[in-house]
Length: 215
Image (cartoon, rainbow, N blue to C red; front, top):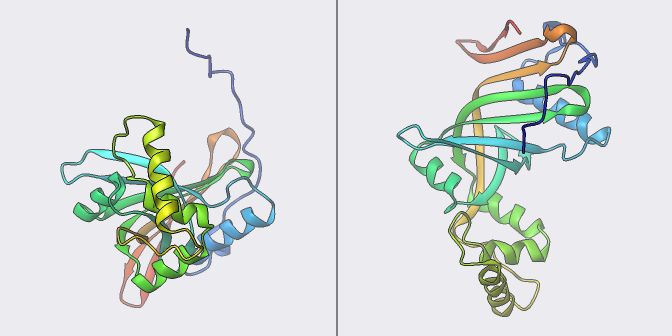
């Protein structure tokens, strides 16, 4: 099968502008505003976030998770024995990307991941549907399975272990908070002359410095 011809695909990138004067002092406030707008207009998966990690040797990997909070950083939850969990334990430096194709916007950030508290992880886990809580016990995330039947058998075992709605959080499951040191807001513009504004850590009383980047 021949590869599809992508050279003829065009986007007008004419959905808005991004100006320094419109930015709040905190990049997290800016991200929260964009996420809120995406939720309000009904964008598909407004909290879908690609998180990229790397081993200490620099071997990268990426996957999509769901943004579950913006408080001191960007919060998501996972099995901490998964590949991303193991990589974050060995190397907490990571990157994240949020993208909203409907308005040609994206947020790119780098930072350091830290584990959320047990209390925060417990509260979020308790809010999940029962089937998702059962799945957290059943899935040995990122490990090799013989077949689908093995996973379904593990789900059945977890169902039998926790027959009621009281399904506690597994000790290996919890949250991460990505504390950023740089956050770039990207707004698509015509002729590929996009607006790119980057927050980076400042010094002294200036917590953040905003810089415009060439597209």
